[in-house]
Length: 391
Length: 74
Image (tube, rainbow over all chains, first blue to last red; front, side, top):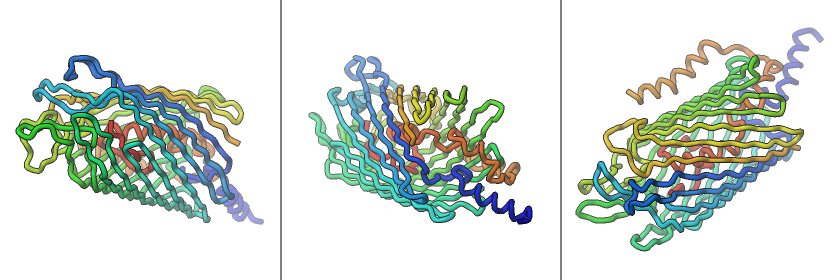
């Protein structure tokens, strides 16, 4: 065998090893079980912002995750995810007062909801081609969602580049829980269709990058069934938004390994635009630093900024011709920063993880500055613990 | 102007990186790229949780996974 053939054989063998692709999603070669528990807590709304002039507790959410990934055959795997959430607390209902001094009325503080989420995915690899199917179902006492996703992924011959395509369809049913003082929507539906394309490539032996583009079309009931709006001359009406929304996004991800520091630097950027006139950008960075073979820490930082939708107002001073009304802080102009720290300790086949994140919103970071801050803007903390087992 | 800034970051930065520095990397030279911390999401479960949280608190979403499903009405 001459040198050229030896090299070709070595290359072929090396290309069958896991992880040599352009960071493509590889078929699992071992079974893994992931357990997570998260405690999410929103800061209370201060007395000066509420209509009752008293501090009001907001949402607390406990979430438990179980994820199992297992190879079925050498070229096929299966994954299963179960997520259970318990939510308690009050959320913003409607705003009163003046534009500069709005007061928030909250929903009843006795709200307790549960959400169950099940998802199953199977993927099949044939040479350089991979196809995947995902089915998922999310159920709440007032909201059901069923999703079907299909994906296709292809590596080039030397696995230095990968592209993938995907479609996703989601059908949702909304049956809001009633509360005294409101007639909330029931029997509503929402359909979501998503297309995405991404392309990843190896830049050098320490760097990879990915670009992704997505398009989402949402039709049906897109309003928030638990929010109301005070409209001059009309009174208190349900949150009312257009029945169609088209969203576009483009993102870029970059990973760079620093051998001298035994660490990996992550950088993500996302640009988003929809036809409700909301635009946003997100910049995110994380540093995965291996302190030893067992211990890794990962500080992270995220910056987010968005503009407001064309029909959003803090307080409406007159009725709108199109009938669209929302004072939802999520449609306002604002920005937010998240700082986080995660630690992972590996011991044989186990990994223990601990994470903390602090999210702080700020109207001054918003992309439009023609409205005062919405008093509903939220700050929150998330504490997570996890256990992984691989065999 | 801020939109122009964000578009510039998204579109031109990857092009610049790709154009100026892509080099052939043999399969046996990809040990660093195969490390777990170099994956797009080193902790996929945590990433899914974060995506769902941001989906329910912000207007924008990249919506490329089912992690965003559910009402998010709070």
